[in-house]
Image (cartoon, rainbow, N blue to C red; front, side, top):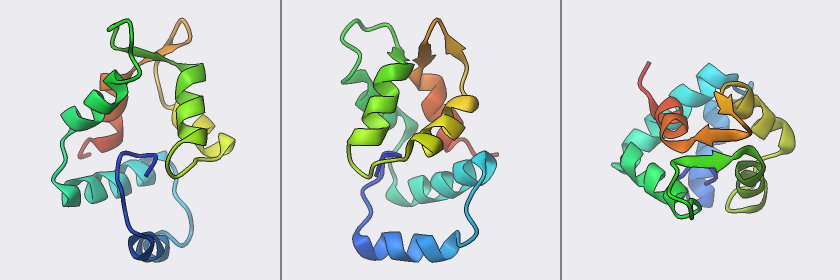
Length: 109
């Protein structure tokens, strides 16, 4: 859910069985990309979701705000999970370009 999807509890149980051994960042991106494809959502919809938090219209989200969103809203991520994600992001002056983040998460490598 923190990744922009809204799976049912049954879906979550199924997905857990698909990734029994855990995921690294590449595995996470591939897994989320496949699930994202199943929803028929677009990267643009994820960008629009981030835009709701972008009051200045800069196209950027602060690392602090992103951490807060991912650890407190929807299906909460752990601080460790968020850090793994942030380690893969280009951070500029404490901010992340959320369009690039969405594309990174849902790219088809």
